[in-house]
Image (cartoon, rainbow, N blue to C red; front, side, top):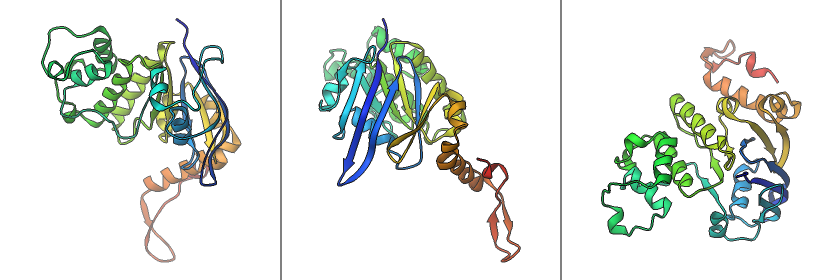
Length: 280
C-alpha cells in the first residue's frame, strides 16, 4: 500500500490583521520524518492548526497520493481526523486514571461499553498489541497512565494515534521537558513509525540536537514564510538560516550554559560567550 503525502499551496492564516502564516508552500512525501523549525512566532504551530482545522485558513491543503488527495481547508476538525490525520500537543492528553491498555482501547474504539472497558480481559486486539510493542509500553500496559513518566505519557499518546490508523502524525514539540534518554527513545520511536511507508510524521521542534539526530528533512519557517528547506546539512549550511535562527539559537544556548565570570569593569558575575556561540 503506497503512503499519502501532504501538499500545501499558498496557505495563509490571519488574526485581526496579523498574518501568522503567509503563503506557505510545502510538500511532505509519504514516509517522511519532517521537522518544522524556526524562531518563536514563525508560524509553525499555526500551520499545523490550519492543517487540522483548528483555525480558519485560505489556500490549499491536500492529503493523499501523488500530490492529489482530499482538500482539507474548510473541513471541520472531526472530518479531518477521520481522514487519518492526528496530532499531539505539548502536554500529553491521556486518561490518567485508566491504564495504558484502557487508554489504547478507548482510542481504538474497540466497541466495548464503559463498564466492560474498565474490566480486565484475556485478549488484546492486534492493533493495540502492535501499538504497545511499537511504543515500548507492553510491560506497562496495566499501569495507570497517571503514574507514567513524562516521556512515557507522550509515547502513549502517539500509540493512541497509531491504534486509530492515523497516517499523518503532527507532533508539537514531543520531547519538550524530556531527559536525554527519553529524547533518544522518542526519536527512535518516530523513526520506527515513519519507516512504515503508509505513515508520515511532521514534528514541530525547538531542540536542535534532537532535530540533527532524527530529521530526514527540515523546513525552516520565519515570519510565516518558508525560509529554507532540505536535509539537515543543507539547512544548517544556508546563510539565511544561520542569520535568523541557528546562529541566534546557538548564542542563547551557549550563554545559558556558560559559567559566570567577574566583569573587569564592575566585578559582577556575567556569563561568558564562547567562540562557537558567535559562529554563523
